[in-house]
Amino acid sequence: MLDTTALNQQRNFFDGHTAIWLFGYGSLIWKADFAYLERRPAYITGWERRFWQGSHDHRGTVESPGRVATLIRTEGAVCHGMAYRITPEVLAPLDIREKNGYLREKVPLTFFDDNGDTAEQSEGLIYLASEDNPAFLGEAPLAEIAQQIANAHGPSGPNRDYLVNLAKALRELGAKDAHIFALEQKLSSF
Ligand code: SIN
Image (tube, rainbow, N blue to C red):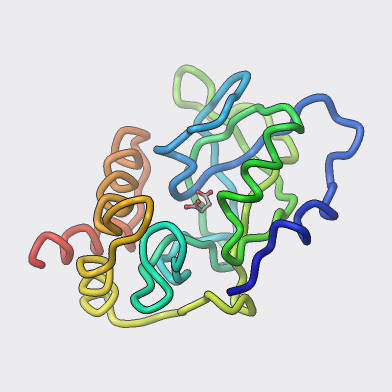
C-alpha cells in the first residue's frame, strides 16, 4: 500500500500562508473531524466525483477493499463540495487520514454566498487520488460498485455509510450528482 504522507509534506503549495482553503468532495464534506476557522459551500470546475478509489485502510481492508470518492478530469463538469478555511498545522493529520493514495493538489474554488449565488474565487487545496496511484480501482458497472460498497467494512466502519452520508450531505447542499445518487439507489437494493 502506497503511503502518501511523506510525499504530501513536500507539496507545500501554500507555504507562508497563515490560512488555507481546503475543498472537501468526499468524506471531508460530512466528516469534518479537524479544526477549521470557517466553512463555506463551494465548487470546482473540470472535475467529476467518482467512486473509483480503493479504500484498504478506512472503509475496507487489504483483502476486501472498499470504494471511496476521487475526482476525474472532465471538461465542463462542476463538482460541489464544502470548503474549510484551516491553519497549516491541520494538514499533518489530514495527510495521515488521506494517506492511501491521495496527494495534495492546488485548484481554483468558487464560493456560494448566503443567497446561493456564486461569489468570489480563491485558490484552494484538494486531496486527489489520481489514476496512477496503486489503490485506484477505476470504472466499473454501477451495480458492481454498489455491491462492493455493500460488502466492504473497514476500521472506520461500513463502506455503505460513506456513500449514504455523502449523498445526504450533497442533498443538503442542494448539489446535483448523477453518479452518487444513482449509486445510492443501487446500494438500497443490496
Ligand atoms: C475528500 O473528501 O475531499 C477527499 C476524499 C475523502 O476523504 O473521502
